[in-house]
Length: 184
Image (cartoon, one colour):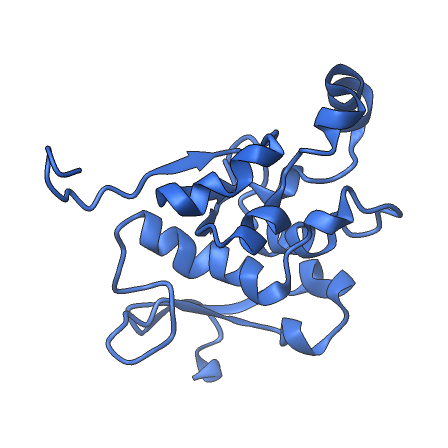
C-alpha cells in the first residue's frame, strides 16, 4: 500500500464454501471482506450426496463459516450469486440465521449461524460498502432512502419464519418504485 498509495480498494473473497480454521482470523487482520452466499449453507441433495462424501468429516465442518467470520471481526457482505441460486435476500437471511431452509428438519452446522442483525447488515450495509455505495445500505440522515417495507418485523417473530416475510414496498432514493405507497 505504501508503494502504490491508498486506492480505496475493497478486497473480498466470494463464495467461501470451505475455509480452513486458521484462515478465519485473517479476513479481519488483512481487511478483506467475506462475501457470503448464505442459501448454500443447508442440507440439500448436492450437499448430502456429493459434497460431504467428497470433503470428508473434517473439511465438511469447515463449510460456510459465517458465524466464525463474524466472531473474528471480519467485515461481512452477502449476495445471491443469481442466477445460480435465488436472488431472494429474505430466503438467504433465513438460512444465514437458521442454517436450514424453511421446513428442513436439521440445521447444517448450526454453530455457524448468524444473528438476525448481523445477517441483515451483511445483505445491506456490508454489500453497499463493498460496492462503494457509501451513501446507502443504512437508514440514517444523509443516506439515500433506498429501502424496503416488509409485511412483518422479522425481529418480533420466530426465526423460523424470517423467510416467510414479504416485501410490501420498495423505495429508491425516497420514491416508491414497487408496492403499497401507503406504507410511508
